[in-house]
Image (tube, rainbow, N blue to C red):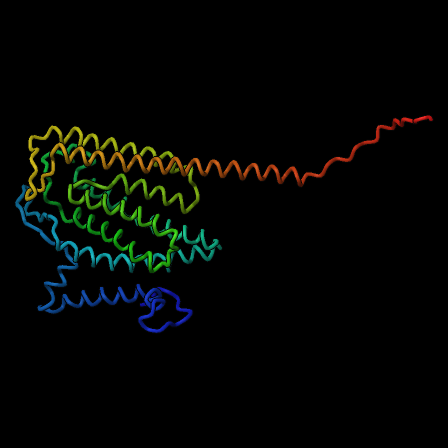
Length: 338
């Protein structure tokens, strides 16, 4: 199963061979794990990679329901879906983005930005619809107070836990993709910064049972418009979403959890509802959102400055190209007599 056009063959186990065939190699690893399901001796180990672990069955008025909590075995599941994400990344690049690039005839720098925005656009669109579906089915949309009522929510439904694991898998897969996509050295610190930011937020949300819907929605909107070069449309949405995230966090953490009766730290029950942890969470969220807004306003000011300079250059060039009108002879001659 080939994902890339091979214009040149490279020696086995060389750097270029690994970069060119990384999707095929990862695909072989996925098939190897799936084959493990066919044999009784390896089935338990293979399931550890494929299926979320730490499930318990509880009786509810609707019947028996399986709930999940987190643990170290989740690392194996994240690793397997990291492999799946690398394969999907190659599919999107080969069969969608590369075809669009050939039609647009973009420069090398714009081509790199377009590929990055295109991959993130697909990811955020899928994540937004998926998280919206979970919010609707879990009742968070109609009853927002359920975010902090009956805390701690120490157990998750299958779709919620699987959502978090795939989110973690995507952002962990972004690290080896820096090598596979031959990202320039000057671009690596910027990408590592936002990869680390997303990973820290997703891990905190997973461990503290928060949710990522608003973040996914705004990022999907941003990268759809980045791909179409319509920056003005998402500017207002970006700022408003920062405000919505801050409002929800203050409502849930600052007021909802503060009124909860259970405010004791309990690692076994997953209860982190203490004053110090609430203040730490609010501080981290506020500082992160403030930093994002600061970066956003700096970006807008730089764009405005560049636009004004470009307009000034165009006006100067237009003045130089405009031919001067010849002076008209008034017909009056002055004679000087000596």
